[in-house]
Amino acid sequence: MSQKKTQASPPGVTDPHGADDVVLIGDVVASRRAPDRLALHDTLARVIDHVNGDVTALDPLVVTVGDEFQGRFATLGSALAACFGLRLRLAPDVDVRFGLGRGATQTLDARHGIHDGPAYWAARSAIERTKERASRAQTRTARTTYEPPEGDALGVGVAVQSALDCLDLVVGSLSTQSTTILGGLMDGRTQHEIAADLAVSPSAVSQRVRRDGLGVAVDTMTSLSRMP
Image (cartoon, rainbow, N blue to C red; front, side):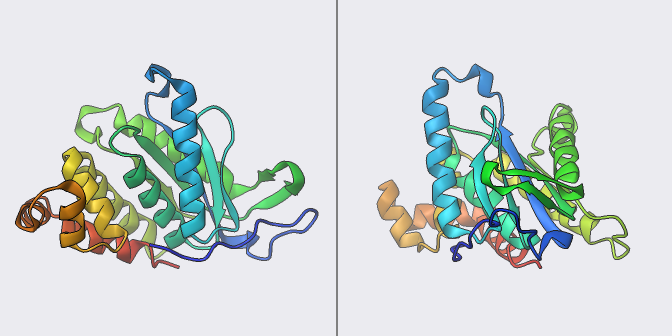
């Protein structure tokens, strides 16, 4: 999951990738019910810093207002890798949701981090869609929505969303221990190493990997993280 981080757009310069960027907007689910909002913010900021060190970004993830954060990426795969890293590292104590939009972007004021453009509008629409879907019983596990650019004739967006819906169902149904195991596997740790960290037998980890479909989740996340 680790990749080298790139620098944010310099002041006064339009990023050359701006015609086809992927914007990620995320926030914390039910953050107003958190018993300690300062501790929540500190945890979110720490994990965002960690993910920024792992995942390539045009503009690294940053907390904007309250518990909302956003970042800009050159590829859908990088944006999704950031989503996966954030969700697994924050779980089980902090639940997050995401909206991703692809399209043109414009840096209005790089010094103050002010951006605009269709990709930002699409990401905003996408996270609102995530909230709406999660509010319904039949789609309550929804945490990630991708809004493709106009003219997605090949239906890539539909295929990506279908995969994300299945992942959200799997991850949202995992126990705390299985979520920890999945996070370890995505970080490249072996089942023996994860077992030692959890003070359980390697066979117990192996059983959870098979029973909960963690291998399928790892393969799916890895494939999605490589998308252009």
